[in-house]
Amino acid sequence: MKYINFADFHTHSEHSFDGNHSVNSLCEFAVNKGIRYLAITDHCEIDAKNFDFDIFCENQYKDTNNAKARFKADLNVYNGIELGQAVYNIPLAEKVLQNHNYDFVLGSIHNLENMEDFYFLDYNNFDVMELLNRYFDTVIKLCKWGNFDSLAHLTYPLRYICGKYKINVDLADYSDKIDTILKLLIKKDKALEINTSGLGMEIKDFLPNEEIIKRFKEFGGKYVTIGSDSHYKEKLGNYIEQGLDTLKKCGFDCFTIFENRKPKLIEIK
Image (cartoon, rainbow, N blue to C red):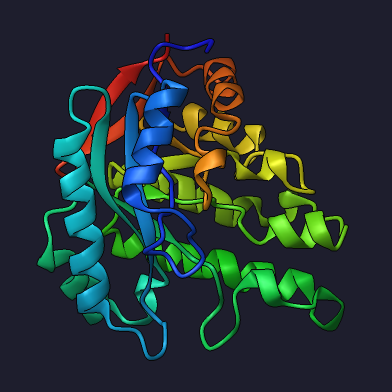
């Protein structure tokens, strides 16, 4: 492995609706792969229907805590959660976060309000520019709320719009809104995530891309987390090395992990 300090701070276990392996299985694989810092960030979609948040949180938190103790000699394991669509029900989102002492909270938007995940949309039936404007407006609302630690996959819809549907999107059309998001993150001492999953998908790029990461740095951004967004143990750590290469290229000497919701800078080496 090229880097000694190797982290994956966006992973999904069987507690996610689309996850596939136990927390222990993820940790065993991470140890074998040489990962040093691993956050289990299962999906908690605040706008989910017929979902028992209490049972989900209790089971996921318990399994991660047990893994912390079991693997502490070989792996730093962190209690995480990916809080989806928090701004659609802020009281519920805040209740979820109050119930457990998480190390790390990812903030994300996977769908517009009362719509399906961007993954499921047929973009031949939508005005893509309108969708993206609404999406970035929602991310701005999320950043203004701010009760998360790192903003996940800022350009999430492009996985499918540009990747699966091959629709060209010029991000310059949304530069003002993206810049607003980046500056809000900096103002509130939040991190930007480099999500490496896109390199293994049809889009073949980070989410967000290198240009946006560089702009975050130029604006004064300090905290960047990195994660594979893996839903299978075999994909843990995928493209993290390329992500660290890109961080260095954009002027960062460190990436960020979170312990007890506090940022900790880890040297890229």
